[in-house]
Image (cartoon, rainbow, N blue to C red; front, side, top):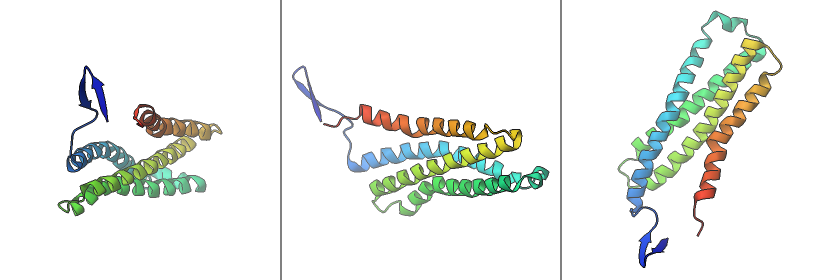
Length: 166
């Protein structure tokens, strides 16, 4: 796309080849994944220790089920968010970086959804054990809505609002 300003033509966007774009997008994606990986790995590590505490044996059956579900989803989130690193390592040098970036981006998005589920179920379990109150599902629902707005709605709105369709 071009703009005409003072009788000169200037190009919008970056002037980069497909390979340069893939390289840039790969670096950006890895930076994003590092942030998500750190969070999911710390949360997952914490979750793994819970079963070894004396409090675990006192949990109700429902709470133990929530815990097991949370650990399994946390393991899936960890694996999915580490997936782009493995993908890059196994396809590096094969001249398919644009396709690798696309698949790594998909893995990252799935990983974020799994991280959201892990965080929500962790919060549900912690608040159920800490309070035993009926308002816990409402708090968790509010937090999940907040995450969905911050992680998905706002970025998608921004993309739609500020991306040229011409």
